[in-house]
Image (cartoon, rainbow, N blue to C red):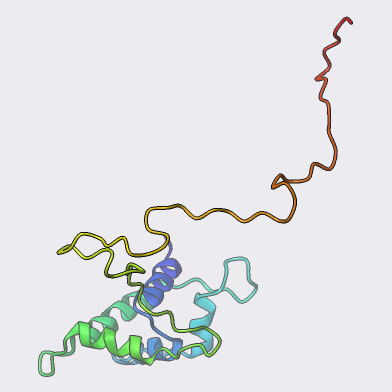
Amino acid sequence: MTNNDILKKLRVALMLRDDQIVEILELVDFRISKSELGAFFRAEDHPNYMECGDQVLRNFLNGLVIHLRGTKENPKNPNDVLAKHKAEIPKRETSKERPEFKAAPKDSEKYRGDQSPSKSGSSAGKPKKKSFPKGNGKPVVVEKVVFKNGNKKKS
């Protein structure tokens, strides 16, 4: 695993944007531009790909410790910092907010545990019949095919 892979995985896991990574690196007095940082995240066969050196990764990890934990004088809770990052991620306008899935029975009276289920409904205990189109209820056969499978039978 290369330094670039480690940097990419940390960015995704911690939900960091490029400008946040630049700020984290500035915490340890390491200056880097967003375009230089973007070169680390490119595919290896891209012409502008750049290898992430040990110094960059070391300074990022040291800055990340300060960013998440804070300093001795001003400690932080890492969970609060991560929650703040998650809240800063903009929602997509096209995606619909998916409500949490809650499995609830359709007929709540039927599935109550304190009473036996009532059979007052018209379809209580009976399976629903399939409705076929008009006719005798059988699907229409378009063509009958006889398979011989290469076997010659004597008649």
